[in-house]
Picture 1 (tube, rainbow, N blue to C red):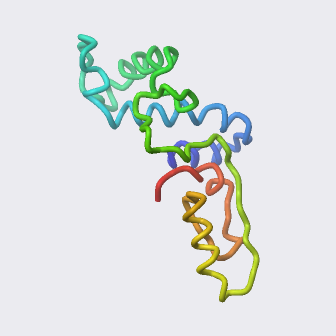
Picture 2 (tube, helix red, strand yellow; picture 1 turned 180 degrees about the vertical axis):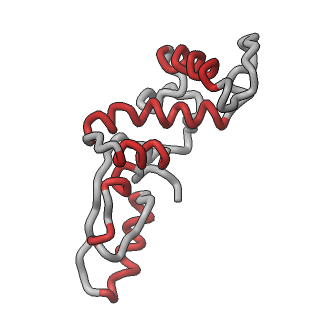
Length: 137
């Protein structure tokens, strides 16, 4: 996922297409990390995933994605768990400005809101940070 975003940023793809394609890339990452269980029970004879055989898997993945499997935008995603209540399509930034002695308060707020990253210098925030805000780090 981080690799996909890095490439899209490198290729100067704007935010709207990035946002549109990220569910596909996230699903592809989940598909790849769940092999061979992702093809189990479907009687598929796919070769092991490698640089020479990935097109076989891309074709299978596209079929599954079109059916709604591995699609992060749909609540019926096979890997979604019921204890993940903070799942949101919102990508954004929360900025808390205050004196240094209130840092524990801001850390507590970030835990309660399920923020994935805390930065102490707003100048270090990148587009990649905002696009990857829902990634566990």
